[in-house]
Length: 294
View 1: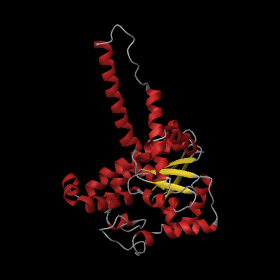
View 2: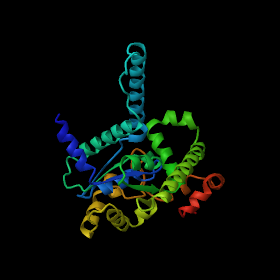
View 3: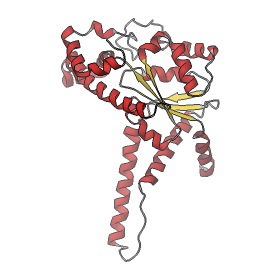
View 4: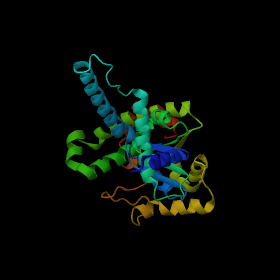
């Protein structure tokens, strides 16, 4: 590997518009990622789990290494200055470099990309971390009615591991009540970051994206400083429509064995009792109302 060439490529990458997508599980993060990635000037992939996976592992590795150096310094080289250990800023640099290298590899087959992004749902809680690593980065938070997220999450987990899901939660109602608490917490955290950085955060409702894909995409492409003309909007809409992604099913036609199960806003009404909805509103009603969910 030619380090200087790679370092120069990373430097060039960081001059592009870096962005990160986040949202509660089953909020439509994957769909949004695919819509954006269909743009010839955008590279967007997922899920790398930089903050939940890579960062803790890097931190652990360097903590262990620092302890080893400290022990050797104390036991063998106590009469000498000893070897230095890396500080927080050094580890932050290494994390930023690692993420940049991933983004570089991700976008290598799309040289026309002016904006490069990554999608992991939990990114939404770490926009401030990415802000420190990439000071010019932008962030997209996709919000969906927490009740629809919960229903979609239930069927998603049942598809992947029915026995575990039933053992862990017992019923859809129990799962929904547990899920909605996390939904409210994550949405609140994301809102705090959005309030603190209004110029660099875009919040998109899943329902608005479903109702008017091209209008929402046009705003996002303008936000990312790429072409937002009608031709590219139509291209992105076609490439990542529900029908295309589901293999030909229209939105609303259910397939329990598909990641793209149904794609229909308001499906929670088909699965929740009035009592369950009342319990949900008691727990998360303020956030449901804030985003226009009655």
